[in-house]
Length: 429
Ligand code: ACO
Image (tube, rainbow, N blue to C red):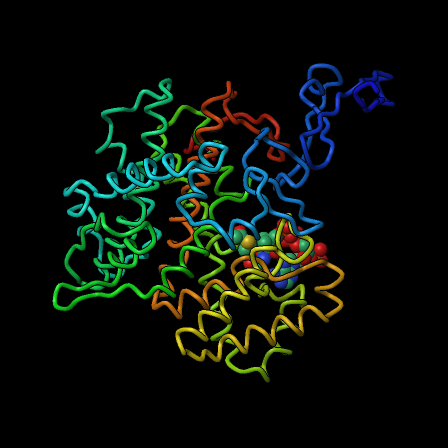
């Protein structure tokens, strides 16, 4: 069978064109439109890239209609049930699950890059105590290129992998340092005897005056959340990382840009916004009122943690997190009225014609905040948790792009400003 092509005819000029169609290993057929401007003289208009594939990638596959998410071919449900964050990080970075020896080596490499330059702590201490940790993260991660420029030849695959590992390893250390600065606590250095997630909990919550025992329930739940947030193909922050990377900028600058994109409430900032919203709703009896507000086109209020650009079905990560939230609350012996509120909100929304017809389902962030809260992680750090996990996706996607010849990302526009006019000096205006 020959490759499919799509025939386009411009009635005004009589010119026509056969556009090739490419297919990935999975997913929708995609029209290759590169030749449109040079042949028919048209650009394409697609604000928000709702219909545009910006790259080919072999890392993550989503079928939004069916609610499928796979990392390198492995269903998220299987990874969530059987794997751990560092193994998933290896998978995303390299394309394959590691052997036991490979995993040990990777664990060693990450562990021995967790410390940050002492001057970075000085940098962090320069922020005001109440700075938002996402603002600090963007600044501090961007500054890493000033500290770790020893091996920054981006043509060299070993240097690229080193930068990727450094970022995965140092992100929890920086995140915990930002939190401790806010709390006014002394620096907690990474403990190499712990695993990735335990080490982070230790750096977050240990104080010099008493021993800190890692709660295995907390460590397991956080590790699960890290797995679920690790990658999500060409979302806004990952596309930002790729766009910045396409200019040849260093990887630390790319990830700092990704952190800034993630912070927005329409993206990773939603987990913080969900709890604010649940607080505002306050009581199950108010749910109907807020559902009505979310449906009102004249009200900017949206149900946070609901809806997704790609999922038009239940976000598979939300199902896993919902079940985990139950377990965590039960195992920690905590009752959180916000959980009851969230469940009632979900129940009513899923039966409401507005949400049903628009295919709006809970997304990954609807229940994640409830778990973070149960683990004692403050709200302002919720999106930072997301950034720690998503760093793996960002650097994997950046590595993939760096390994492929990629033109600089440069979209076009439909200009809607004035036509040419003549400059008039200020005294005669
Ligand atoms: N509450 C109420 N209405 C909604 C919601 C919501 N949460 N989400 C979408 N809609 C409505 C829109 O008003 C729009 O209605 P219309 O067709 O009548 O104009 C329709 O559903 C489609 O919405 P879009 O904004 O076009 O959908 P898009 O794919 O561009 O946006 C987004 C997806 C940004 C996630 C959106 O659903 C939203 O703002 N959700 C709340 C924020 C959130 O939870 N973000 C986290 C996303 S997951 C992540 O990044 C980790």
